[in-house]
Image (tube, rainbow, N blue to C red; front, side, top):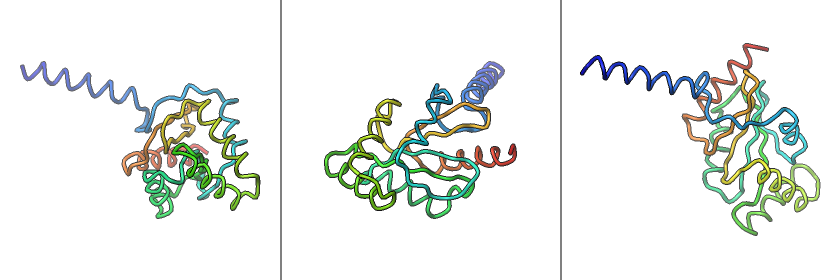
Length: 166
């Protein structure tokens, strides 16, 4: 019985490791390089100056988004440049707040920019905020929703790997 349990544990661990390369949070986004170019054309607000770039769809009225941004501002991911993509998923007030934030920082038509950001999010299958996209050093694009401390630690590990390979 003990040998069988050990075998089951071994296979379970192997499956976990195979599904998550190098402790990378999230799942493969199945995005091509050309699809990732869309992020560069989005109306994002940059924060940080790390070697790895991460895009995050956030809503100004989302408490989880606020927590994520606070963790980042407090230094949870020093090797990452965050590119916040404001969207108004949580109603008209959120759309207005996102548009105002974009206008303040980027000096563009905020309503148009928020609409374009929201359309990009929908085209990528984003259903909740915050949703984070990044390219792993292995070339694949990953995404996940949330932004808890464990996910940020995993991202920072990927960023360190990214930095070592450059």
